[in-house]
Amino acid sequence: MSSPNNGFVPLSFRRRRIAFAVANRTQLKMTTPSGRPAMQTRAIKKSTVLFARVNQAIADRSRQYPTAVRATVGLLLVASVLSGCAPLTASAPADPQQQAVAEQRNANALYSRKVLAYKPMFENPGGYGRAQILDTYEAVLQQYSVAAIVYARIIYPEARQTLPPALQPLPAPSGPVTLAVVNRDYEHVLGMSAALWEMDMAANFGRPSKLPIPKYTGPVLIMPPLPPFPPLQDVRDPKFARLVTMTKKVDDAQKADLARENAAIEQQYAEQAAWRARHPMGQYDNLDPRTGLPYAPPPQETQRWCMMGGGRVPC
Image (cartoon, rainbow, N blue to C red; front, top):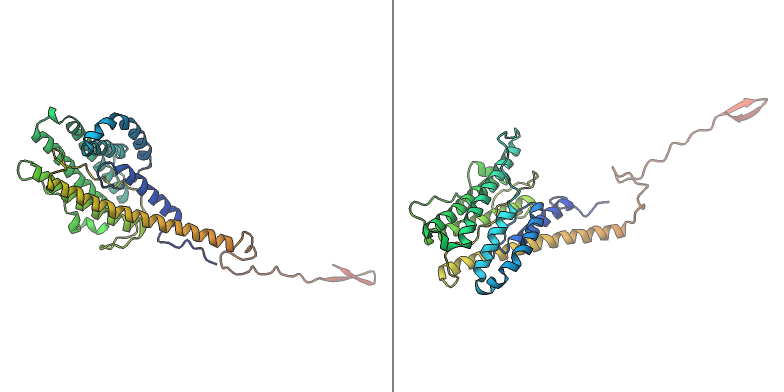
């Protein structure tokens, strides 16, 4: 007797993980062409309400500026997904893993504030100087880099000593922030996001990875969503179009990953149903579940006889 549920992690846990990934990836699909998992259940409901409120307001505008609208909704969604990541109190937990989780939560909270600070500049660029917009957007990218590295060091302990090449910190600008700088840094961040996704799939679902990623069994973490596209750009610009194409390639790969995981889970459910059909409930009531062998028969008592009144009677 064996159950078909012999995967890398228990089926219920896999189902919960894939539900987080699918739901949050769907939310962030409107941030950019590429969605990023952010595993927090309360954010799902918040984002759903947010969609309803902003859809009508941007309906007319979307026909004229589709790329800009995606970025607008993206800003709202990044803030929504991370809105529950309030910084913890000054009293840090004593447990090392809890300390790391608290650090990651604080990094996400700061990332959320950076995104919210950039949001009005995108919505009303005429009210801000070009340099201020670029500097604020660059700050978003820099904090994403910080939050991504903190996340990586939790699910990949070896990264606490040496970061993988794809997750090197985003270098600080050495001069004025220009369109070329934010485009370059967005491409760097896109590579970090793809590497983080691969590590997360390996840690939570046992997927193959270039790195020896151990199975992650700690608290559910929130992967920082990819920032919106760089500002002050035209989709007809070949340099910007290249970033859109690269982002879509990452998005398509993640769609395929989620589809494979969902198919594997559905197959496990089908195998469980088939196993239950072949083994009706009660069929193995006579078997010891600890050994899979029949229970030992109860000991038979030997009848004792006694003499009474010159005859033999049961004692």
